[in-house]
Picture (cartoon, rainbow, N blue to C red):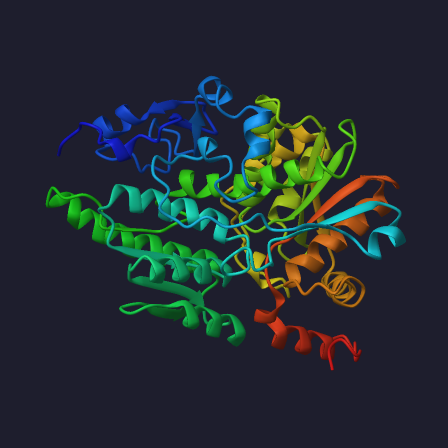
Length: 444
């Protein structure tokens, strides 16, 4: 196999990959020589830790000056030098809105903003459009991938199916059979020709393992035949690139909030935790802006999980009780159930990285009760005229708890990320309302 790099295999402003566990660094030239590809997702120096992309910030700083950034339109590819791309293959789109709370913020005594990734600016109205865009841009640049496999609790499958269809790639979707019919219908609406859904009697983690194994078998056959890999799993095969898409959530918030508050004000940003890749990527995006002197407000990152599925919260509690971060491991859950199905993930791939983000930023992980999630969901619908999925209620419940425990104070600037559109779980909302006896005008 040819070990010489093609132009597409080395993103212009990227240096290579770095292991988040052991710190080992790999240049793209080294990856091609030793692995035959620059699409590598795990450290292979005996560590098997997750990899992330490193950039040449000195070169980027000469281009992304405050004047240059201010002159560019507020769109997804605005900071394209901070993304691992040579050629942009996926169509540009506007920022998702950052809006000030109409009622809830005043009631809580905080300056509350909502980051609306449920808005139409995202093609499938969830934050999964962000990482999926980077994964697809990478494989389209490389040009040898023929099929995409994806496991999902709904939103990633919808985003992946959309990008596969619009770029004429067949797609196979693996989902838990228990997934709500509204989300199943939304996936079907996006599927193109030669694509399919496999419904498994399994949770997300088991679906992911199946999708990765099926993809790996096909790619192994290609390698044995001396051919490049033929298929990919966005959040696995291309994970270092996939995660870079989540940076845009953080960089957008930073550039938007800086227009709303004073430069010295601390910003507390709350994300739901599924795999935890979103909050980790967002934190990286914000820190890159600080490195380039494009954002100066201090920030803290918080993650919220349902109490019934909270492996990251459990690990964070160990740290709060005195255990060293390096000694703490995320203990995967095999059995769990929550109304916030899109973050019902028992083995979060970026969980350990999230602990480091909390420790460094001064934030933390918060667990919330199921009924509190539902009440917060109704509050967002009634008081703010926003219709998120239950992860939105999860985040708002987490903000309320953080205020109650003193983790954030009255008067604080808080950003709540609403990551997915609630129309896809309308039937679930009705069912839970009946379960909890919440017969309100909102749910009738």
